[in-house]
Length: 406
Image (cartoon, rainbow, N blue to C red):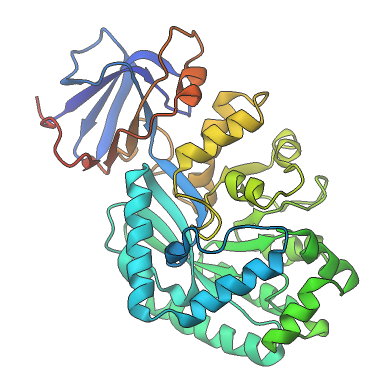
C-alpha cells in the first residue's frame, strides 16, 4: 500500500526545495515527490525538512574506538603514530565492536550510504548485513617491494571472496603516497578496472606529505624509517602522477586533497572528498574545494574517523561548512553531502536524491525557528539533530513511529 509523508520543506536535491511537499512511498521505493494539494498525507511531520539520506563518502569505522584519544594536532606524523599503535594493539573482537559502534552512530545521524576504508576489509561482514548501502574499500599498504607484493596478493584473494551484493560492494584503497609504492597504485587501478570496483586514495592530506613527495625529506622520512618501511625509490613523483595512475582506469575518490594545486588535472569521473571538521581540527590551510567546483570537478563530503572527529554526523559536517563558507549556496552544500557522494560511490541510480523510482532513503530534520524565506538557511541555522531516518522504506530511527500505512 502507498503511504505518504508531508513536511514544511522537502529537499529533493535533484531539484529545488518543495514548500509544503508530500512524498509517497510504496515498499522500498519513492513513487512521487510533489507539492501539497494533490493528495492527503498519512503522516504530517510538521515544521521539518525531509532530505535524502546522507552519504558519507569517507570514513574508517574500525577506528571508532579512538574517539577523543588522539586529538588532531600540528604534528601529523605524531598523530599517525598513535593511530598505528592503536591498530596494532586491538584484537579482532575489539575491531568488530568498533565497526558496530561506528555503524550505529552513522545510522543514528542519518547516513544511508557510506564509503568505509577498512584494514583487511574488516567491516565487510558487518556492513554486508546492515540496512544501509555501502562500499567497503580494502586498504592496501606497501611502500617497499616486499610489502607491496604481499598487499597485492592479499587484495586479489579478498576481491575473489567478497563479491558485490544488493547493498554492499567492494572497493580498493591504496592508502596514501607515503605508504604505497607508485607501481602498486597502477596495479590497483588495473585490478579495479578488471573487477569494476571504485578506488579511494588519501592524497595531499598534509604539508609533510607534499614535502616527502617533492623533496624526499621532512618528518615522514624518520616516521617511515622508524616503522622499517622506508624505500625512497618507491615514492610516486607527485600528486599529479598519482591521479594519473589511479583515475584513468576507474572512478576514484581522492580523499582530503588539502594541499593539491587547484589547477591539478583531476581525471574524468573522479571525485574530491573533503572532510570539513577534520580539516579544521588539524588547522590546515583553506581547502580548495571552491576551485574544484568552479571547474566542474565533483566534490563530496565525508566525516573521516572518530580518531579525528567528535562524531560521524554528516549534518554536522555540512552545517560546519556553511558557517565557514556562507558564500557557498545551500543547494551546493547539500548536494555535496548527498547526491555527489552517491555518484562518487557508484550508487546514484539508487539513492542520494528524492526522486521517483529511487530507494526510499530519507532523513527528517527539525528546522530553525523563524519565517526565513530561504529554506536552506532554516536547515543549516538549526542546531537540532536528525529526528528520523528511513532507509529502503523502513524506519531505522526512531524505532517506534506512526504506522506506515494509511
